[in-house]
Structure formats: structure tokens, C-alpha cells
Length: 308
Image 1 (cartoon, rainbow, N blue to C red):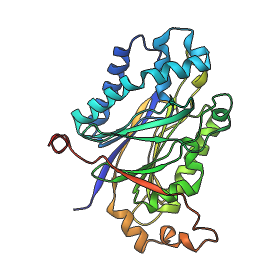
Image 2: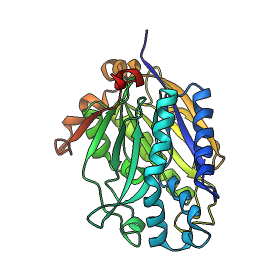
Image 3: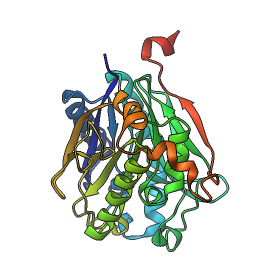
């Protein structure tokens, strides 16, 4: 029997919620919807956690520093919600990334991934967009990580990261079978840049890639006021896969889950006998050896195993 993984990528709208209980209820509804579609891995977008700023009142979202502080302060509560839901349903969840204040005064763009036991891993974005550099003043992370979630090993990058091939290559060489790219883009141009990057990384590394964007207006938060995109699950364009490499694709800017079941064993087969072997032949490129290193974090334990 072939190894498979059912993935759900969110096209997620930001709402001006009135309380943390409303936020928890919203996340719970979204998770239950995806689990009802059979999802084992759920991916929420970059900076979707910015909707938490509405909890600080109508003015907070129009001051950048106050917005970042307000969202960062709420992250422990949001982590509790996602850990509970991952544990309850026995799934892996990539929570929406958020700006997180650090003890040294810097700020990172951090996505958290929760395994089926509720155990948490973290990834801080490495490549900052111009607006993250200034005025947001977001610092770059330092570590690439592959996460073992049980059915598969997944790599996690964030938005602009997927446009830089060496990052995804390092994850693939460290064992990632699926590379996740949550994103936040305000224009269709930005959406296409991330989507094109995700499709190219699937081709180069003969892996699945997953794109999960924020969608729709968020006038209550100036930092993420406009959001454009559609979620997609992509594969190498080769034998056994769709000719264009598109496994599933959402409707532009409509809130929804985009869900697909992917065959993990097919990746191994296409690397060995596909029309091309881009994964195998990567090292023949001039300068191909200069890769960052990626670590491995095991989040695969089930609830019962974790309790022992």
C-alpha cells in the first residue's frame, strides 16, 4: 500500500473579531471543516494572526508598533488553541505566522507547527521582503528545519523564502517530501511570484509544495489591509502527476480550504525513473554545493505515545 498524506491549504480571511473566544471559535470551525474533509496536515497563511490586533480596540490596527506588540502578546493563547485542536483531532497544524517580539528586542516572523500530540515546532522566516525590512523591522531567522509529522516529513518556509531555491533544496536534501509556503501578498503580482516559486521548487526538488495565502480586505489592520491569492498544492510535472504539476487550486480570493490527497511513494519513483531527475542531477550544477543546513524535529508522536 502506498504512503499518502491528505493536505488542506487555507485561503484564509482576516476578521475584526470582538473577543479571543470568537477567535478560538473561528479557528475551531476552520480546523473541524478541514478534518471533516479528511485532512491530516492543515496549513494556515503568513501573517493571518494579525487579525488578533482587533482585540485591542479599533485604533490598534492603524499603528504598526502597537499592532505588532498586540499580536505578539496574544501568541501564547493562540498556541494553546492550536495545540488543543491538533491533539483533539490527531492532525498536524501549521498555525498562521505572526510577528513575535524577542527578548533581545528584535522581532521575527514565526510560524508554529503542531504535531498530533500537540507538541510544537517553530520556524522563523529567513528572507525578509522590503516592507518587512522597513518599516516593519523584522529580523531574519537563522535555522531551516524539517518536521517529522508521522505520515511524512515536511519542510516549512514562509512566502518570500519560496522564491530562493537554495532554502527549499536544503530542506529536500534533509528529507522533506512536502514543502509548505504560507504567504501574505497584497497584489495579484505578489501572489503569482509566490505561486511560481512554489511550482518551480516542486519541479527542481521533485517534492510536493503547498501554498496557503491570506485573502480579502482587512481594513481594521493597515499592515495587512489588502490580501490576494489562491491556495495551491503542486507536484513535479512528470509521470503519474498532472501535466502542469497542479494537484489542486482554489478560486482566487474566496475563503476556503483547498484539499488533496498526495502519493508520497510516487515522489521516490519519479526521482528514479521520471522523464527527468532534477533531484538527482542538482549537484552537477556549478556552485551547487553551497547549501544551508537544515535540522530535523520529530513531531510525529500520537497523543497516547506522548503521554507514556
